[in-house]
Length: 412
Image (tube, rainbow, N blue to C red; front, side):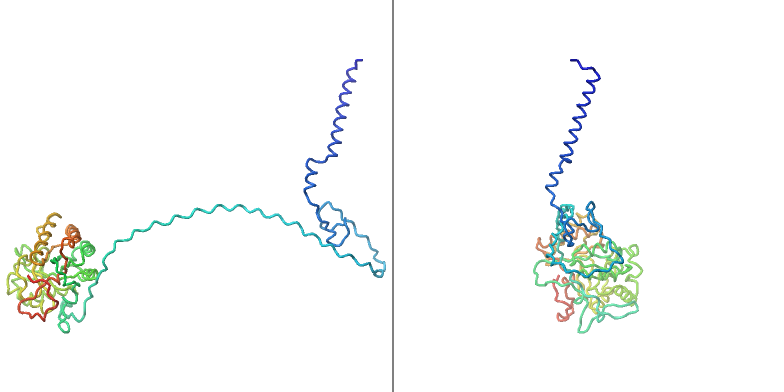
């Protein structure tokens, strides 16, 4: 039988509504999804009323929400309180189970420790340098006052500046000895500092009397262990074209005036072992050639306990003073490093032939300091020894051996 259209539509909606209602009833009975599982996994909370001594189902003020708190029965304010009744002994209170432990705080994971810093690279050790054997400062017992200042003199029991300010040297060394003097120290602060810093301490430095502060340069040299000399300006060859300065000893001056100028030069510094007649590349040839001029000067130096170096190559040794003459001029005429090397080789040859040789450089120029430092570094390997000038002097004629300021080292 054919159902009319409106009835079919009504029947369809009746089936839909019936299915929806059945589904709602079924979901209500099942509860929210996962509730049964959550209820089975969660332990029952303790009844706080039991902890307070109340019966099951009671509540405490301030308890968790949702648990009913029954109202306390009202009391009549005019009622007479009844006598207390003895209740049967109460059962021992049941100890409340400990509250659930609070969840451990979540601690952020500590960052992994930083990698340790690599150890510092070892600092290369500085090359070991021979400890400087300082020369003693000026001794007041070896000084006397003049109108120009303090000048050397013989000390008690004949003590001399040669012995007091001479550098230590092993006189038992039988190798050929070479000594070097560098002049014009103090005129250039830069060159003076480089010479004191770079040259071997066995090299002697001759202080210029015309320097602004020769005593300061002498002190720096003594700290390094270097012997010092004072330069005496004398009349050179070619004078007056070659001018040794207004304080020079001249052949045309009276001897008394020359000796006074000698005291001026000697007062410019203290703590030196002797003197040399070289200033500014000039070597006092004309003055030193006259025995009547140079003789009294050497006698004064001997009486003051000083040695004397004659800067003229090939000149005879001083006749009236402890000292010797120069064998080779290392930088005259001025030349290149190669020429200085050849003159140093000549100095070595003379030392091997005679047992000792003395070289003179007229100034501490950069090329002189560089070549001297390089030459001295290999001297031991070539079978020679670099000696201070105080180890190269000889006894003058007419002076007894027992009056020697130090044991003479090499006789020419």
